[in-house]
Length: 372
Image 1 (tube, rainbow, N blue to C red):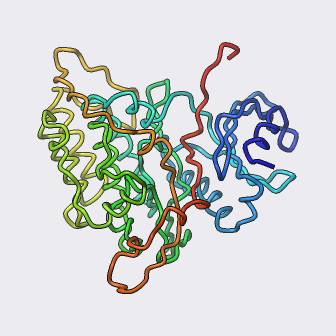
Image 2: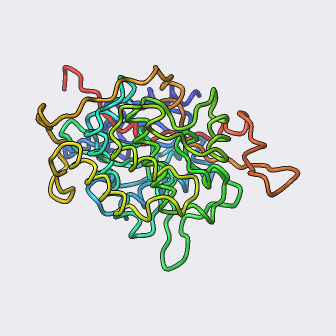
C-alpha cells in the first residue's frame, strides 16, 4: 500500500491503546508525522517510520538516534523526544513535543528576514549547538527547515537524526567512509566530500553561517539547478561573500557570516560560543540593545523602530521551493572511480538518492484549525 495512504488510514487509530492519532501533519518517503493525544489528554507529535522502511536496520537505527541525541543535548532549545516504540505492524515511532508555529524555511520563503531577527535566531541555535558540542554531539544537518520558530516566540533546533555522538572516545553513531550526510545547500566542504574524519563542530558552524546567509539574502550559498550541482559546488568552491548578494548588509553581520563560511576549517570560528559572542556583539552594534540571555528567555525581541536599521532589500527571487522546502536531508553512498584523490562527489548522480531521503523533523508542527 502507498505509504501516504497508509498514513491517512492511521488517523483516528490509537497506538498501543494510548496515543490517538488526531491528524496527519505531513508525510514523506521515509516517515510521517501526526498530531496525537495521549489517553491522559497530553498532546504530542508522533513521528512514525513507514513499515517498509523500518525493515532497513540502518534507517531504523538512524531514526531512533534522533531521540537519543536530542535528549542527550539537554537544552530547552532542542526538541524533546518523549518516548519511542513499535506499532503492531512493525513501524518504529517517536513521541515528541508538539510545536505550533513555522520553520525558518517557511518564514524566509515569504521574504528575507531583518538582520536583527536573523542574529537573534542564530544566537539561539548556537546556544543549543554549544551545549551539544560540549557533549560531543555534532548535528550535521543544520538548515532553515530544522530551525523552528514557535508561536510563543522561542526557537527550537530539530532533527538530530543525522547527529554523530561520541562517548569516551568511542563513536556511538557510526557513519562509514564515503557516506554523505546532510543537506546539499547547507553542507560544509568536508561534509560534501564525505571526509568523515574532518566533520566536527566547525562543520555545524558552517551550516549556521549558510542558514544565516539564506535567511538574510533569500538565496543559498551556492547556486545550482539541482541538488547535485549544489553538492558539487559545496565540495570545491568557496562561499560567496554575503555582501555580494546583499550589498546593504551591515559589515558587522557580514563578518560573522563570512567567517563561518570559510572553506578551510581552521579559518572558521573556533567554536559555537565564539561565534555566538560575535553574533551578540553584532546585534548590539546594530541595534544598541543586548540580546536576551538564552538561559533566561527565548522570547523574540521587539526592537524599537528608532533603533531598527534599514532592512536589506529583498534579493532577486530564489526558487526556495527547490532549494529549501523540498531538498530533504540525504544519506547516500558515493562510488568514486579513477583518481581517488578527487572528491568522491564527482561521481554522484540523481539516481543515487532516490531511496535515501529522510523526512525532516521540521514536520513536527501543527497548523491550528477552527476546531482547536
